[in-house]
Length: 167
Image (cartoon, rainbow, N blue to C red):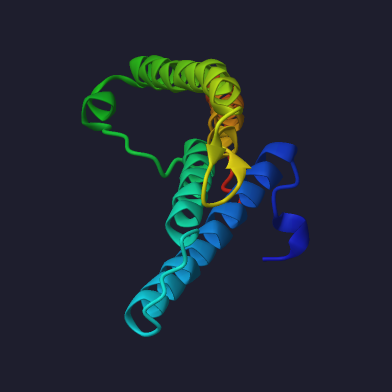
């Protein structure tokens, strides 16, 4: 595949970016946990920051991977009933599914922003960061989920498919 065959739209690039971010976050979290285990059992001096840093990274990469999963279609979906329906009803069911996922994104956006605001004044003691930093990806991912759901609805009603950002 040449570089000209790759999707160039903003949505595909955004999905690719958040997937890379999630992958790098997972690798860093794995390295931190590996260091913590080594330090605890070999050096008898476990770093106090390691567990909280790993948890913070996990929240970030899971939220962004979930948003990318909506765009790329690798989220959980059961299509048995949908596939048994006539084509016209299948499109309506798919649309309803995307609407529900988009509404979930709106909820994440609104209540995630409230959570960030409510916890910003509290610190994560071992990291010295505001607790709200841990929850920043929730409203951002909610917005991405909403936008990716809208993209799927528009594509569905135009008779198109949303292209995978990795191809």
